[in-house]
Image (tube, rainbow, N blue to C red; front, side, top):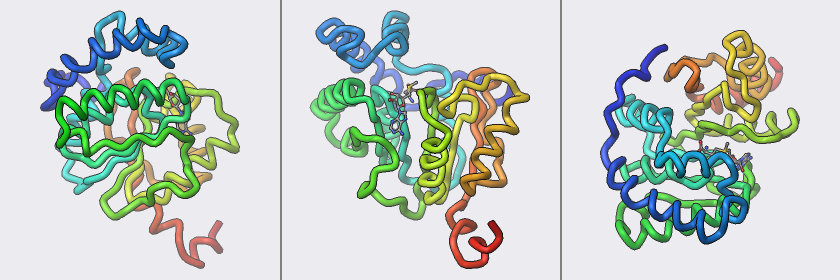
Length: 236
Ligand SMILES: C[S@@+](CC[C@H](N)C(=O)[O-])C[C@H]1O[C@@H](n2cnc3c(N)ncnc32)[C@H](O)[C@@H]1O
């Protein structure tokens, strides 16, 4: 295990729990486990009263203290949006991409509820109900990061590479390699997934947050700079 032991909440986590949990419960009751896009994943969380899972708390804390100068974070597969709300309420500009329309609708409803409760903080968060990469979507900027937490979902290898190539355009890329589309909980599976990242131009991984079985987050810094230019094209 690594940095996961300290369980102190980041600012705003409790207030968000108080607002989000009853709203999630109500949406699940109103639209059903399928209709709300909760499925087993969020249904279990809501039943357990968990708005945030441990990896979200640990990752938020780490991003708030890492000193990388990041001001915008884009999340691929943002689900109900809880992690984006947490970072957005802590001052990051957030963009969440969610391809599942039912899940995206629930996230939009939760976003609207938070907008009424805390308009200024919630204005940091933008939801895009579409599959990443989005053709004419927001462009990566200096100081922006793209991240994936739990992204477990069915996806072909070719599509996974397309997602990674689009991620490479950001100055910072952060990913839980245990949950990048396929679930790879064993340490011996790591070289394979890092090879996939390298194939897309994401090299020199730095272990950013080690939560043991709860997530292994690797950071790729300035991958775009290495990916551009004639020389780097010739080297591939
Ligand atoms: C297992 S869920 C987890 C959601 C959230 N990251 C969390 O940890 O609670 C993964 C989500 O990623 C979404 N997803 C997968 N591929 C995506 C893509 N290319 N663009 C946007 N969303 C995607 C799925 O629809 C699903 O809602």
